[in-house]
Image (cartoon, rainbow, N blue to C red; front, side):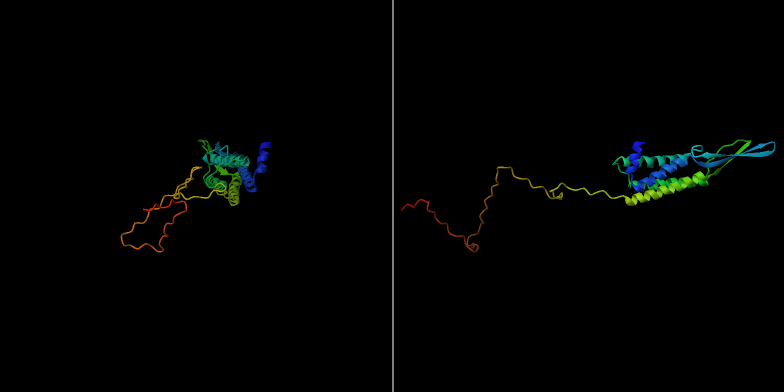
Length: 221
């Protein structure tokens, strides 16, 4: 109970509304959904007896889907309250909306097409609906509303950021390799321009070579 209390306090207001609708939908399955009327003919006189049936007493694929939806929504909300970091396609709000709409559609289908109950030659069984199934329909619509509020309150996750100090680099731009420590790159000598005979040197001309004081004196011939 302490774990459930902590999980309930950790939920947001929209998530609590969805949990309340899913839990109410599960509890409504114990309410009378259907009424079964058995008509027995005894000595030419008809005698009718009426009984109420819950969703579990007339269990079919519709009731199984309602049970699965309510249990799944409660499980997801409980995991979220405990810090579950899994992702659902479309987000929790969209999934809750779809689950509630699917449940409401199935319950509405069951209002039009009652479950078939077999009788015999002497007993004729007819099935109607009772107030419990209408409460389940309202709770399914409440689950749709809660999912819509959850979707509106959802915030997109923060964008991925590169490490501090690093600049994004395009894939076409190769990363320059740093020179090894202790080594200096030597500049390559520039090749002299080749000129054809008679071609004028570019302006201004290069200064004549000067002799330094350290050069040995020229020997007289």
